[in-house]
Length: 431
Image (cartoon, rainbow, N blue to C red; front, side, top):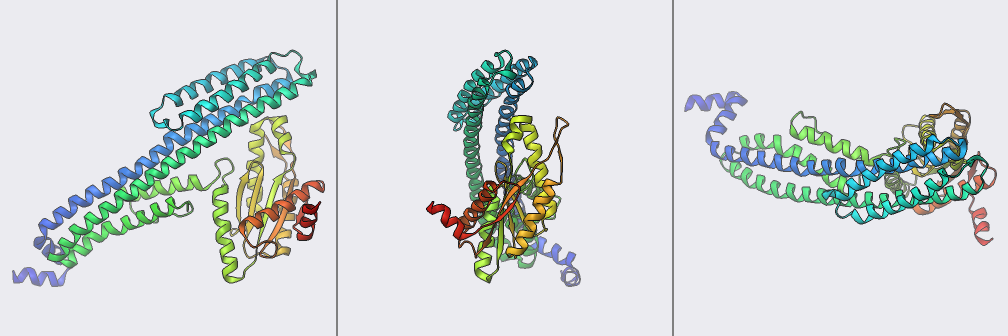
């Protein structure tokens, strides 16, 4: 016994061996409970990941199919090729099959009514599309433009309803996250009880052994909480190769997918509003100035109408790349909606913001864009600039100010930068 105590004083291994000998039973219980806790947390969060992959991606794919189905009638009006009828019919069958799969899926019970409504809008769009494709000599028939507007309106409505279903799925994922938090908290309490039993018999050994479990669990708990609060920029830092490390990587991948716009790769609108709020709070706290740029692609609808939505998507991606190159690493670029981008310039007063805006406008104008058809587009942008807090006292006001300046740029002839002027905005409101 004395030899064992002497060895315990000289080496960590000896101390662990002595501690394990004293608290063998509590350690066994602790190991079993810890194993269950890890599996439970992994299982709970895996449900979230699987739900997102199983439900969000098919909805996005169906939206892409609907947008793709809008191309044959457009191309038929432009080129008059009879092959577009076949393309439209094939896309229609694929869309119908996707809708049928959705309606038969038990995972989408709450979204079934919205899916049905979207399908009805697609049926109306298909009826108009067939009428367009059945019209002879489409290139000389101006009446088809009105039918095309009706067709596009039904397609837009179908995709808008799918967006609503998309939001319902997001809510369902949030419920899974909340459930995962409840499970994690219950397991943490259970682990703590068993851990205290180990502490009573061997404090040092119990603390060392439990630390390898409680630290990563706390990191995951923080990640779940921040993620559930909408902070998709948060990342769990857990440099491990075990199940918890893989789970942290999965959570980070999922958060990244919800933080960025899937088409352009820049921040999405939700993340823009979160970062704008943070920047406004910093401005109030420290008296710093920041600028907001609202950037709108000129005549973007003509790109979609003339070259198709794939060309429009390529144009959006290209402008996002050009803007990213024109900005500093600290600047924040986000897709605000449609063909509009928003840029936050921290610590940037009016003069610097105008220089950045002009540089971006020049670079877009001087950068031809190759679209899938092989043609080259020459785009321009209109940019509105507003300064915080000089032009606004809240996040909503700074967005409204930059928007007004951007619309003024549009009205002044497009392809220009306009600084927000409160007197001019008031004059427009009185008019």
